[in-house]
Length: 139
Image (tube, rainbow, N blue to C red; front, side):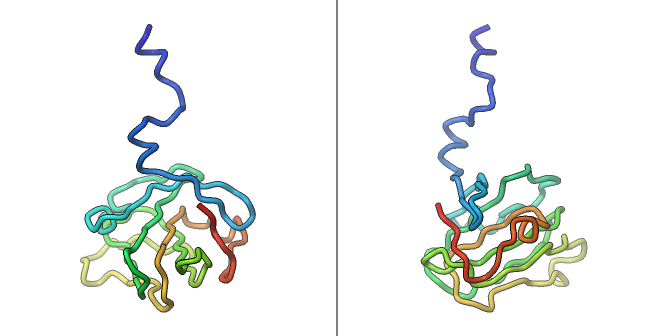
């Protein structure tokens, strides 16, 4: 019985350390896994068959730069949002398709603007929430 008492929808302490609430421009809150080290950033959302609704991944680069992303070994379409140091949206890619070919043939997305953060969401979320460049995302 004591074991069952701990089985709720509340995130585990480890999940709490690795995720944060991210507030989109219209006020909608996304629960985002945070990738800050090189290994986590390289893996990203690879090998996942699904991404829960209202969830995503926030990539935190150590310095601002022009970072392109690809969809190698990513199984679901993703929306990508690049932000500058002030969390202002500088670039968007909607519904980047999974790459089902050799890594060398996978398309690269974004990286045209200087950014420090990239938020990946399920494909279609940019349109669903009316996200546009120039807006700000909070966390």
